[in-house]
Length: 329
Image (tube, rainbow, N blue to C red; front, side, top):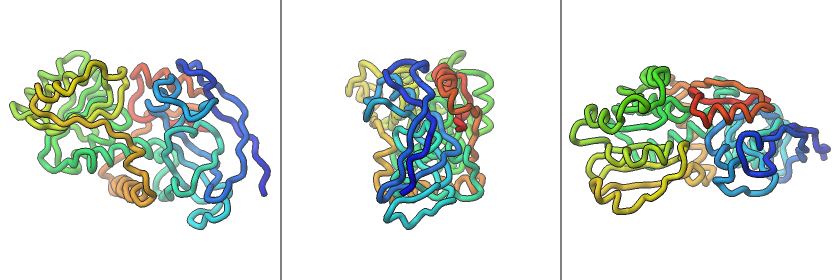
């Protein structure tokens, strides 16, 4: 059996701000039955990483290693693994554990990475791209002609959703926090983009969507937007709350749904939509096909050294990032 290899990575010993992210030496054991050891080439950064780091989400163990998506090369495989071999290019999304140079991953959580998709692109779209896929096709099935509002339209998920919605024939309206981000959203499938810092997005959506309102609102911002989001929906429309970059929603009542037009609301999580290997592979195949066709293009806006993950978290939480951020080991 191969001896454990020296490794480097980011750990969190105590919940806190970005300063809680510590660069340290780790050990990566040999893969066990059904497992694969990877040399990671790129790692995605997402708000869920900050939710874990801050203690908003409970930790599976201490110390915590954040990171929900990555891509790399298979180093070796454990017994019983037949679908992968050393040298294969692969990618994955898991709730945590990716901020390290090497990692052991269950083989059934990996997908083969097409040669046409670069490692940094793969690391930027496994969590975010699969999120866009399930939100648009399963949480609420978007059809041609639907009017859709997406908050954080210039973020990693938002840019993918704008392109995807356009390809489906929906009218996508996005919100963003600066003129540059509004321009980027318009370049990525959104028919309309609203600067929420200078405009009342509820009033602007009413002008764009008319009296009917939006069929669905995808809201990953949370505290600052949810009340306005409900006002943007049509009668019996769907409020999809899938993140809280501005903070947790407070004071929500079921009567808020009734008073805004018998609305539906859902709080989905990606990992409930890729529980089985079959569903994971099916959604990944759809995502990769969209990328191959050019209908959806990934936007890696920031590349940061893994050891500087704290700086990447500060930029993300300040909402100064555009597109996806990738850590490079």
